[in-house]
Amino acid sequence: MLTTICFDADDTLWHNERFFRLTEARFVELLCDHADPDHLAERLLDAERRNIEHYGYGVKGFTLSMIETALQVTENRVPGAVIAEIVSAGQEMLAHPIELLPGAEQAVTALSEDFQILLITKGDLIHQERKLAQSGLGERFDGVEIVSEKHAAVYRDIFSGRSIAPEAAVMVGNSLKSDVNPAIEAGGWGVHVPFELAWALEHAEAPRAHPRFREIGELSALPALVEEICRNI
Image (cartoon, rainbow, N blue to C red; front, top):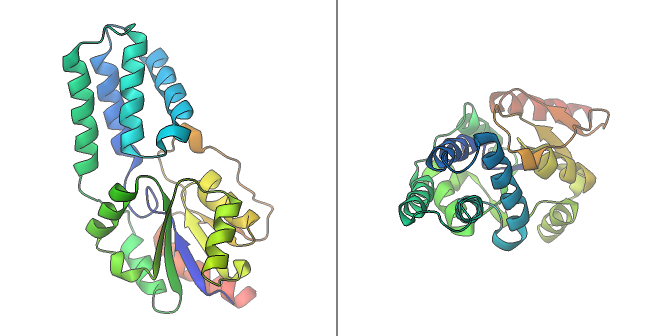
């Protein structure tokens, strides 16, 4: 039987990627005199890819990657006012209020009545804790894991550390690369909830032939899916 439902946070429970897209558009506009928009977006993505191992995931790393890209495309001649605008944009992202996605509160609340509920997310510790507190969902979770990366070994460690049989755990998230595929590899179930916006570095193929893979349109369908899985295990 299933005992544990694990949720991703960003773009699973609340909006996140759209704020990155809006800030990137602002960044491109600031530097439109120095680089073609498409080229600038590629340079920024390259910087983000390089910097993950140094800064991790989240707004702070994104802001530093924007500054680095601005310095590169202007050959270190970027005006101080532009750097100030980039820093301000990052601060605005950190301060933006949480907006829950449809069905998030209802799904977490309903499932918390019968299952252990965990939040497993990656990113900046302070920012993720702040977002969880602002979401109003904090009391619904029996545990919170904020990790630097999500791969199969991380899920195995979390399951083992909490005495959870992997096959009794479901990981729910918008990212196939970080939420679904590694949780299935670790022995658990993976439920994909696609989001309309996806970061290029989170792309992966869906394991549609795997018996522990499921996909739903939004979180409101999750309680019924969990019930179905329990009936058929």
